[in-house]
Length: 239
Image (tube, rainbow, N blue to C red; front, side):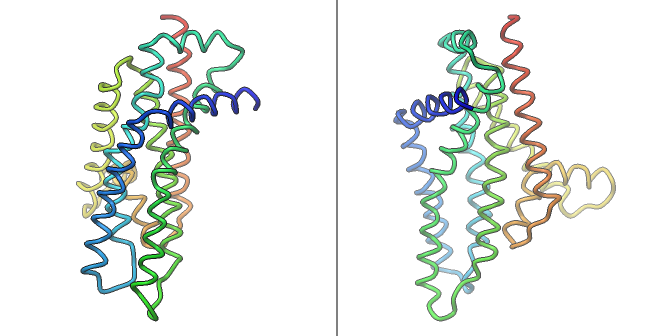
């Protein structure tokens, strides 16, 4: 635990000292703020469902930016090999970077909590239903964990940050499109495709429904990609 904490602090310091982090966060808040403004201007109900659905799509493009340098930059600079000679395990290295990336993700998402306060003021005596809002944030947290684990895996496969970003984004878009293609179709094949599509699972959280099957999907998929990342880092010893 001591080594993992030290690695986590090292990675978070590295992430938050990078100017690009604040640039991406600012752009993310500007884009999501625009969607929230449009919603408040035109909405007839005190719900953030439409806003949360758009935030999930926006994160498709911002999550790869969080993860692209976590392992790719280490590989390019040669510091990963140096790090692996320290008394730490591959699992600790991967988890340290995963939690650092997830921390940045949560910090980037945290300012959107202000939308709840603004909506509460706008709603007035009508009030708002906090249940779907809390479940939506739980869904975004689980989806963020999956985003970070996928991005971390592809970052471990290359020494080029741009390549890591492009591959991760392509995979995210594929998982999004797969779910959309099979959304209104039936049959065993389409059911499997819908289950693979990650955005089909966030919809339930946005609607205020917490289904253990959706939680299991995100948790198991996150652990799977973390496992693949550990194996990828282990393989560097033999290259």
